[in-house]
Length: 190
Image 1 (tube, rainbow, N blue to C red):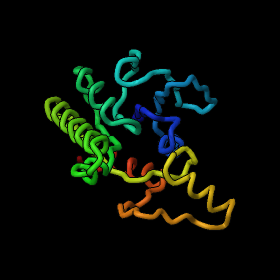
Image 2 (image 1 turned 90 degrees about the vertical axis):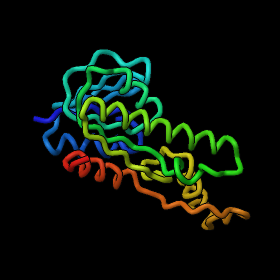
Image 3 (image 1 turned 45 degrees about the vertical axis):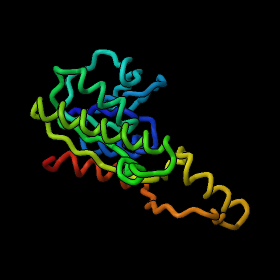
């Protein structure tokens, strides 16, 4: 039986990924900042927070990082004894905000690129396979602060606001589709 470690298990993607892993016969170690319980067989919730407050973990085969990539990359790089297949959710902002006029957006892009580099170096050093998925505008669990407020507004008022001056191109991705992509990536070569 494959044991999967899931950081961000209670987040938007995790809400879809954890049930899929359990249905596929995986044992799941779910890490969340909030204490959770479950009657589900083969599901163990652990309270932890990346990068500094992760307790000792049982053995696992695959790691899914569904939260902030920079915190995960630092934790993984500092956890030198871990050797596992890694699937990490990054952000398309690493590419699209690199040359933004906003210094905060440029800083975000630089942090994301640095996190990807740290993760790549750590996995290469340990001969671990890694796949990083760069998503844009994740929606679908009602937890996002980007698309869900617009959808709620449109449902209530029966109009969708047009943002004057907006010119960015983003392709919203449903959290369930990312969970599916994570499963597919875990069974494919890096």
